[in-house]
Length: 296
Image 1 (cartoon, rainbow, N blue to C red):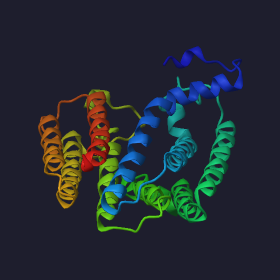
Image 2 (cartoon, rainbow, N blue to C red):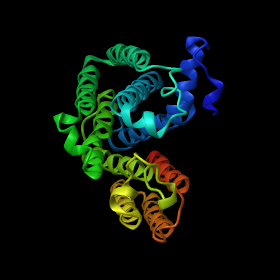
Image 3 (cartoon, one colour):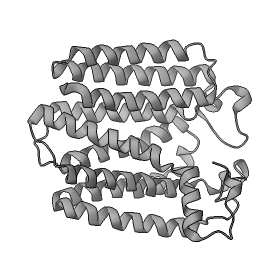
Image 4 (cartoon, one colour):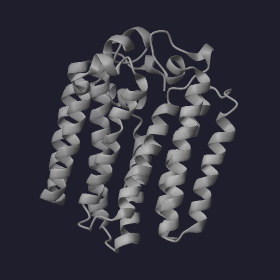
């Protein structure tokens, strides 16, 4: 996407579409959420026999997608000062879209989330509301933003539970009993998403952006890679244990292979930022696919 093709004179919908392409790619996020929701519903079906209708699955996944969108807008507000300097070509920086405009779209998204959740059940609304409350705490950095902004790893850890909340929301729409396997699933997707977050911000020294913190700039490249490797190993081990619990040796073996692959590829500390991000993204998506395939 070329951000320069969008200008302030373009129609509103075109400018918003340009923003989505730049900061919230619709296809990529739709695939991510579809695999997230599909893996949750597949595991519930395997462990409790409680299937979910396609209508409920689509609506619940749409709520998750909209939550991710309003989180993106919240991040734009939190990061506006640094982004204005570090990313002068972005549509928001150039005024093609504005923070007040994005705030309005996020408000519409939150209203839509509530209405869609209500169309499923009031039980689902309660769990969605808990997730919304956590995103609001994220917006104000839990009241300790100055400290968190100086401790990047703790920043990521403190924000990571939103994935767990969304996984619990997906469970809530099914009406199925809570199981130990689903609790383990929540841990797997939380750790996998944490690895994804770390992988987005690991760069070689020449790739670092002035004024923009990354795990490699804060920890050093080698320590950042080992943090990512360790997180991926934990994810793989827990996923393998989950697979063994439901009797799928093949998925358990593939999960361990993911850990080995991450270790081998990252331990040399030479991958460029795009490669590390692509690797972390691919492995999170593969986690979802493997969980989805537990019953095959």
